[in-house]
Length: 547
Image (cartoon, rainbow, N blue to C red; front, side, top):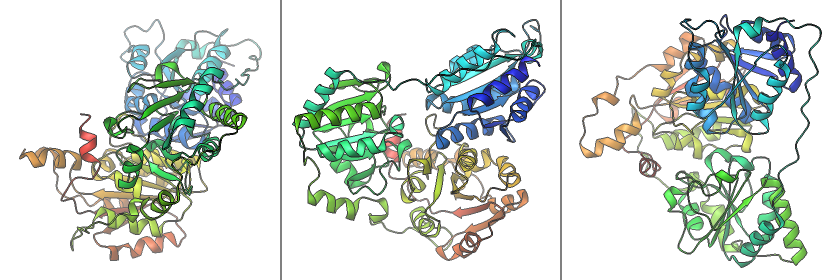
């Protein structure tokens, strides 16, 4: 057995069940070793797509994502997807072949450690035969327990080295959650008791603590909201405001900015989630709960920082409130509940339909699709002017039904995101929402979706432009020739890949979508929606304030 086989066998034993990638000579043996040990290999058509698939698989499944790439160019091709994962703190392990230490003149040779570090990932390496299992276990723990993206470099000469006998069985003892200090819990409870209008905002770090946060919010009278990446965590809760930040409904903006206490749970409370601080009203107390000390106060000053696991902190806070015999009404008064039921969704907000005979208003389109698509869905959204419509007008069943690879704000990741999420949740209909620019950037992965037989819906909001730039710079009179393009028949392109392609200009054109949904769904469906785009999306003004 050589080291490549040891690495594959060890990762499979630790629980790596899917590996995404593009195979070259450098990662051929380690990928085959993973497959031989029971993992499923998903071949993408580009390493960038493979990286995003692995990222989305990890986010949606709650398991580690694994990416396998060739040395040098395979890693650089994957870099945007790796950067997105690193910025999102996705537990992703990148198996990156590396030129042998003696091959200093190889054309494949680059400083892979520096490359990983530059984008916020952690650089690790398998050093030798003797340390191979320990090196893999260390990288695996850093990724899973440390919530990091780890690039594990696999030098070719080390991969080929032979092992005498059987490798040791990998050991990965479970770690206990980080408990908050008793003093911090008392201070948090003091603030909750004093608050008249508390609001909880839950982020990515809260996705496994929904029940604990709901219970605590009920005790202290808090309204519930999430950052965009945690959307769906409080689905169907009568006190949920859905998403805080640029996507927030007018009612959510009103109620969050009217809070006298905001507690951020596992969220960065960055400029997107807090609308550049505009959601923090005068005199509002700000509390942040996080596992990592450097995250607390990183984006804005807080009045109290609590270091601890979200679920453990919520449980400890609930226990302290119970010991004090406290139950608060807070923000949970009948009028607020009635308004949330009546105004709490973007689908409840009136708008002037801007559809024409040749183009459909994206709101009209998305509301219609929401009624057609089954409730059990997982929605993946690319970046662009259109992105708020599928993000907020499509319902999602829970926090596992929304996959939002937007930390790096790159377009072109949406289709690969949907593929990774689809493999994580085969029980749900995958829905990819893309702009035409992002669709064309990632179009090679249509072949992957067809080859895998994924019954997915791909909605392209086609304004034949980079819409965000059109609406950002157009009002100032700038020439827009560099960001506008001839219309592209994406439905025809999709049919060339083996998809079912439908062009939609009006609501009446959605009949083929109903037929596809009725079954048997043997091919992916791409909807080339020619959208009316006379003005920028509502969230665009807020978004560009950060540029």
